[in-house]
Amino acid sequence: MTTQAPNWYREKIRDMVRARYQSRGGYLDGTMVQGDGGAGEVKFPVVGRVEAYEISGSIQKITNTNPSLNMIKVSMRDFEAPAWMRVQDARRQGPNEQAAVGRMMSAAIRRKRDNLKLEALNTFVNGVSTLDDDPKECLKLGDGSARIDIVNAMDAIDHVSGAGNDDDDNGIFWAIPHAWMSQLEMYEEIKNADYAGPTDLPFAKSGKVKKRTVRGCHILALPNEHFTVGTGAFGTGSNGRAFDDTGYIDTFLWVKDAVGAEIEWNKENMSITSHADYEGTPMLGKVSLSGASVGILPEGVVRLRYKAINSATRPA
Image (cartoon, rainbow, N blue to C red; front, side, top):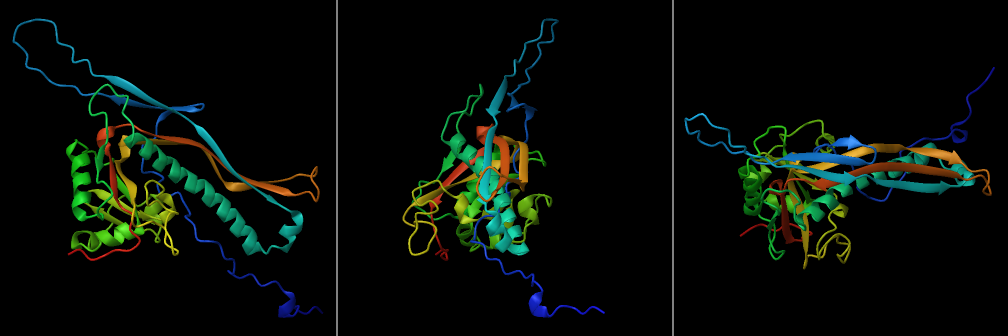
């Protein structure tokens, strides 16, 4: 007859692993258009404007409108996040801790996917488009001296909507810090707005992401660490604060088809290999990514430069 081992001999599996707070990433997946191609390069074709003209009534050759055809190309970039683990350490880890290591490695790749997009937006708004047609520059709002206001949001939304973005599949997205979202929620128009965008996007499925839809623009609050551009960018704050509120940060509003993003391959699940040629036969865990992002249509992207606030204040 066998008896069950006493409780203190059995391993207790509990959710007791603590991880430092960090962005889980992947929030911006699906917010930008995919391109064509492969083998290390992706292409985004852009067709220019075509105008109709009045015909004379006589039989004569047509007047060719000659629409421009440009091709925006971008090369894939490769990334990986490796981590050495000693077998001796692995033996001391419980299953929860081992799973936590894998989740953190996967989050590193998802954050890189998001940051590739934000880096491309920053590069795009600070450059000049190579397209043949105008406009060739993105709209830039704010000088960093004022707090974000609902009027600034409406200005940006009106700009991209007024340019002719009327395709229901091309949503407008605006990624902002949580403090900016709280500042905007001081206005009833934002506070009472519900999210009305695609439900299959990563940020839409996350209950941790604050989101609102205002006049077709999906505003989403991302973790502070994604806002790294500006004199008050993440990491410049003091007394435990994320931002230097005497400076500014840049955020970006974009239409889906105005920016391209392509992931050629994405390996979030950590691979583990043992290396017997090293002392103790350590294990090497890896996650990796090959992808790229690029700005396409200047009229569909807006930079909003406003104060890097850490807390909201009620408007006068």
